[in-house]
Length: 113
Image (cartoon, rainbow, N blue to C red):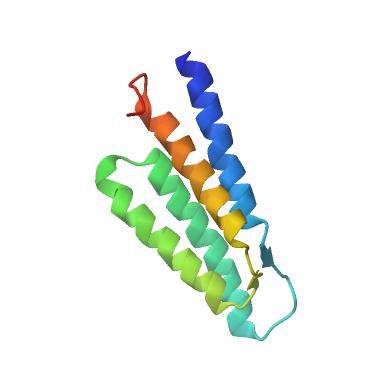
């Protein structure tokens, strides 16, 4: 039963990310030199941040969050992320799915209440 709860929680988180992320478009058009460097820095920084959050010990987790934040800032600095309008229903559905999915992953056999 715990395995089913884990799989369902992971599926809900991915569904929430899908609903929220389908209105974000990343473009690859040619831009001046700074924007190309910012795009490269964002990919490298996000990869380093995710690696640090997943594989490094707990004492190094803040370094991972700093790298992820820097990567997000670089994405917006490169002007290659287009945020389309999101309906309130999609936003509610995605946050609900991610919230319940996280709750199912973090419960670990405990009740939800």
